[in-house]
Amino acid sequence: MTLRVRNANNAPTLYVDIDGTRFAYREFGPSTGVPLVFLHHFTAVLDDWDPRVIDGIASERRVIIFDNRGVGGSGGRTPTTVAAMADDAIAFIRARGLEQVDLMGFSLGGFVSQAIATKEPQLIRKLVLAGTGPAGGAGVGAITPKLLGDTLHGLLTFKDPKRYLFFTRTPNGKAAAAAYMHRLEERTDDRVGRTSVRGIAAQIVAIRRWGCQDAMDLASIKQPVLVANGEDDRMLPTRSSFDLAHLLPNASLRIYPDAGHGGVFQCRELFVPQLLEFLS
Image 1 (cartoon, one colour):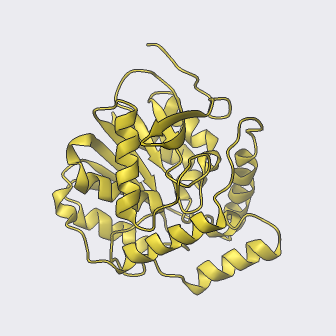
Image 2 (tube, one colour):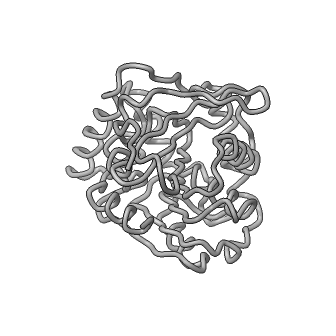
């Protein structure tokens, strides 16, 4: 089996032009097989994927991560609807010449993954939905006191709010948060820029619209789906993951104890092998 670069911290940042807009991406792992395309969370860029998670997956699967329009290293203006973000992701996948992919959507990326699966079902083989919820779901897209408090805490202490938003505040959760933030700093070269204030505002609008829109017909998504979350999600209600698993006709559910929104990072020793088994 021919291998590409297998280390998330040294895979080069590449670019593809789509109708005049340059999209940034990285790929590594085996060069054969159905690739796993990652769709990331609110405000995230290429450098926000946990390298231990994507390296673990790339040990067996071809991994592609990319910045959507107006985010990180990609040009253009950030869309204000999930549907438009899905259109951009579909265009990126096709621009890479891929006939079929697996999708890993985390948080906002999970919204986009659901939209892609309903727009272009033939493009998707399997779905992984982590820390996310259905359109119009209870509490989905809400700006809660916990969310505001954790964000303010991060700003006042000059620390990334993900430290508080993604992890539980138990001793285990705090230790996992510190280790995760350290891993995100490991890559020192060829990093992309942060999401702009304008891009963040556009994403907030898109998230709010997703939470307020009518429910989607998730029964139309026939592909196998792995739904995963922590038991104490402070950003999206963990109940939303149960709702997804109930509404999707071919879904399995993994809930990680003493874990939060970033449960797939905090419990990566469980999640990575479960994901690989699911994809195989």
